[in-house]
Length: 180
Image (cartoon, rainbow, N blue to C red; front, side, top):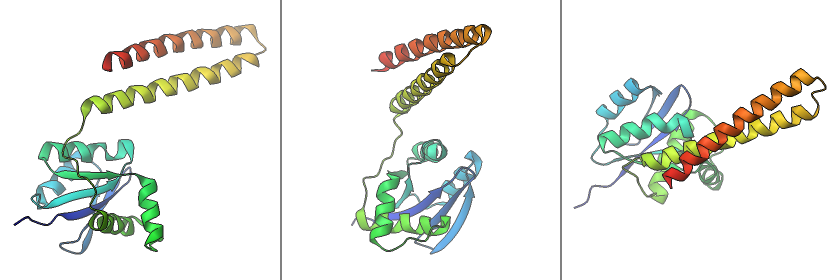
């Protein structure tokens, strides 16, 4: 006999995680810190639980890594998909506790594929690509400022910054290539 999966909804923000556990029917709030999340996971019935949350990038990182360490299943859902689910089910109110309940319900209804591990290589590659994009954007802005500099000292300084950014972009691109 298989144990049914219980989808625990987690609405993640920078400072807190709002949680809805359908077993108890209660809402709770956990600080988005390693210690608080670890305590929450230790108290959770992990045999049948699967945490469901929106992909929030850096804000869900600690939760994902602690779930990975505990061998706890989790589902990271695309925020657009969650919004469409909310619209389709008529649940348009927007509070963190309502969102946690919505995520739990969405898990029950669509039974998303659960993950149990964090792909560290993939996360590192994504971080490198994000950083490269940031550096390219900074360089583009510096070049635009150079066109309007008007002062030779300012223009020279901007050229120096662009040269530094070129070096950093090259270094990051080399690191990206070494990951592939």
